[in-house]
Length: 403
Ligand SMILES: Cc1cc2nc3c(=O)[nH]c(=O)nc-3n(C[C@H](O)[C@H](O)[C@H](O)COP(=O)(O)OP(=O)(O)OC[C@H]3O[C@@H](n4cnc5c(N)ncnc54)[C@H](O)[C@@H]3O)c2cc1C
Picture (spheres, helix red, strand yellow):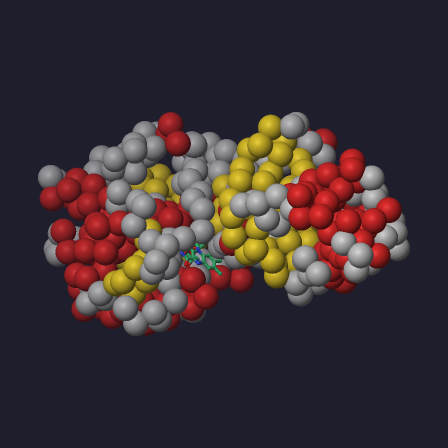
């Protein structure tokens, strides 16, 4: 290896959740290691600052890695607490503060942080990594690629890391925007702004592929909310037919049936004389009542007493089976995460080291992983960042990498 003046022991490309966790961990494990973080934006952790609606949901107690993440945060001076659903937040509930604490640690530990430093090229030459940053070149004995995915390009993530990895021989699986709202066909304007609780299911070719209870928000484009975001992870574009095989069902009352109640109301002198619109609007939000009657093919002006037995059953069925046709997701611009990434079998599961290029590691969303809402994705970023850095530091302490 040729020794160059600006030779770093470890270059971390991307100063987001994974890159910041990697930098702190590397310097703690090997204080004499020269570590540089290259961040495209003017500040590190632009996306981290926006997470969890500004509260930063760092992990989830359902994850085996949660205690490690919580302990890591405590070691940074950030105690954490969980909510009733197992979501863990920093005690301060301040995402910007989390990013600032990382930055303060980088400075205190002696990590070299370059901001406004978009990496344009990465190659291996004469036994070391050559990193092209704008008009400059930096050389490194090891590299952690932590550039995130394509979700949320306004935070600096536009998939740059995939091209950098490909240039070193890696393959990238198909990437899709997930944890995002879903555009639906023929959404009635009147539904916009409505929020309902219910069970959302996704069917693909008559198979239930996802189901979750929660709050659904109707928007001008379709549906949103945490269970919709989680459902979006199961919408895989299927070639030319796109989302055609998928249907989303909303069960407004998963815990009960209304059939016997509707039958008794049908006999009631007052309720039986009401229109179906008035009856159903007393049960669910009025704009949804109109959609339900349309989907059940029941004229809204008909009186309840005029409905046949099968029509009553049809009404009850549609209270449990309102259907929506997804046509697309809201795309990477609005997505919180990227599905797909660096092919899993090309990366060592434990150390996150490339199996193709010695000295190269991956961390965070660039990997082929996506988790549901609730702290899974940040936990993955922090943990893969830490593990990659531990492995890089261990190799440094054992005499370095051989690129
Ligand atoms: C609005 C929003 C809220 C979210 N809330 C949560 C939450 O509460 N909990 C949770 O678990 N997950 C949440 N997520 C998902 C989570 O933020 C990501 O999964 C996580 O940040 C991924 O970490 P990362 O370090 O891999 O990538 P990022 O955090 O995206 O960081 C990648 C960094 O690399 C930089 N970069 C990219 N290309 C280059 C280049 N060529 N040169 C130099 N630098 C480059 C980027 O500027 C960026 O700073 C949220 C996402 C969004 C968009």
